[in-house]
Amino acid sequence: ANPVDADDIKVTNAVTADDVKGALSGLDFNIIWGIGSNNTPELAWVNNLNVDTSWDDESKTNYTISTQKQLFGVASLVESGVTFAGKTINLDRNIIVNSGTVAEWKVNSFANLKGWTPIGTATTEFTGIFNGNGHSIIGLYINTSAVGGGLFRSTAVGSTIQNLKLENCYINITAGYAGSIVGSCSGNIVNVHSDADIKSSAGVIGGIVGEMNGSGTMSLDKCWFAGNIVN
Image 1 (cartoon, rainbow, N blue to C red):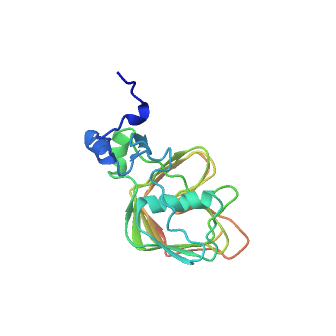
Image 2 (image 1 turned 90 degrees about the vertical axis):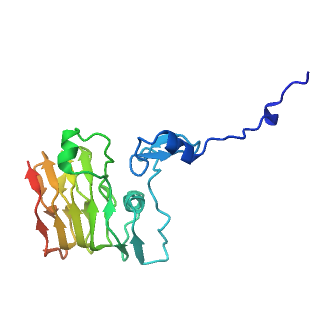
């Protein structure tokens, strides 16, 4: 008999991503899980499987985002050094990060939630305009001792966060400044609403913003907070 060469063996029934999702129908492939390069399930946020930065084009000054992956892409781009100075990011619909309610999350000890890393770093602040256009970001879950923040860690002089709602969000910060929209703001926050639950042992905490910090023009206008603060 002739020996069999490995190159002669052909797999005719390769497992597809849909096969994996069907076999593991109990897993949440919209938020928590993703499909890796070998069609194996992987935690989405470990390998950035649910991060979309394809919309970023340096030649543009206006962007529109409409998905959870694109929202995570904003955080990823700023973390990589993109400040969005002179540019505007628009939401054109509500974006859900985690489903369910904060009350339900607490009952389940916050299991299986997708964590949010606030936009901005110690060296790169968001400098552009983030316009919610009246839409909501729903279901942010932040539980960290590494940084302060909320939706944003820090925003620079000249930045504006406007026309945005945060709904059903839970924020637990143990270091830095805690605010549901911005931890440390040196820009403007206009027409923003939040009903987040905020817990902080950091000592500086606010419903919308942790601190207004800077020597330039800053404003907090037409904003309201209807959540809960525990310090």
